[in-house]
Image 1 (spheres, rainbow, N blue to C red):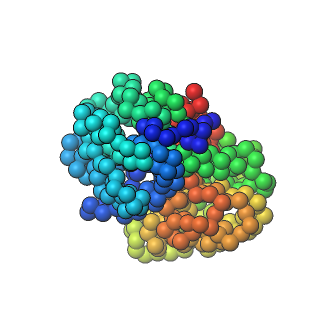
Image 2 (image 1 turned 90 degrees about the vertical axis):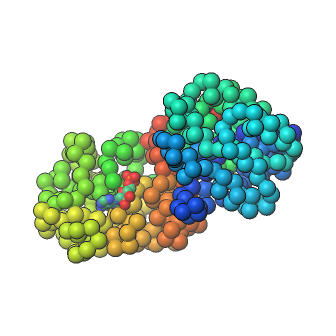
Image 3 (image 1 turned 135 degrees about the vertical axis):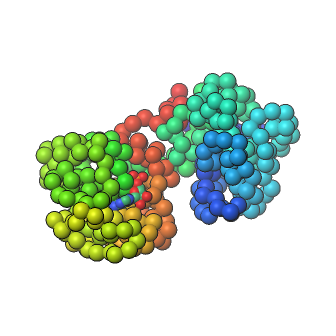
Length: 390
Ligand code: AMP
């Protein structure tokens, strides 16, 4: 697959699809990690003399009033600081002002256009990969580079649409994701443990099926665990349950009993945030809600992980955004952080937990893509990457 390194960039208009979908509150960027992660490719293109045109989505645009909340202007300001160079921000996604600004770019300049999802207001043109929009955006540049791994599982005009109409390649961030996730996918050193948590079993069925023969253990925590425990007949009280997946859980426990490792105990509450108790699986009251794995489970998980050379983790082990329910996730992060193991952390909430709890640099790889890493590890082809191949 072509990478940004394979192109002669000097004086070329290079469209880079980045992921600037950062959390914003009260007009402040709460976490600029995604902008920082994009710098390597942007700086490379800039230094090679490209005229850099950046595109990204931010949030979801459903009505006119979302536009103010999700403008990329604030991101252009932060990016200017990080690049130490004024980024030209154009507050539109098409039209004369944008085209004039692009035509006036000089080698090494960086331009960011407005949130690509502004095009979703009239008929989901961006998210629906509208053909004419993809062609129009492609007409603004000479080369297309996809460096937004986190949106690569979607077929949008700003990735697949442009890539279908321009010579294209991947950026350094996407290259790094593919390299590291492929280690997990293709040649993981056994024994391999898959740690799965988070809310729903349904979202993780693909990864479970793809890894069931490649891994030695699947450690299950988070709300997912209660669907498994319920399928074994335990009373899980008011814990979150994914009713559509009960038959799948029963099937897994019947056919792969030795690989599927479930919690033995949990932190429960009757009301969220109060009355916190540690209970074994057979001690739940009807109004208990399981919100984290318990101490015996943490020890059991550590003992199993001790035997493994590769660990692939997707989904927090409890409601880890809330301190009282974060112990399981934190303890396992801490345990894995100083071990000589290949540890691949899937994106989304697990990546946020790893970064927020101070383990940003402790693992082999922390993916920037939640859904994208899950689909990649489930063995599915990502349209945003496939379009580059073609
Ligand atoms: P997912 O996107 O499926 O990985 O789910 C992540 C979400 O699951 C996070 O917001 C977690 O707080 C949440 N979660 C994890 N464990 C639990 C639990 N025991 N009960 C309710 N939500 C949970």
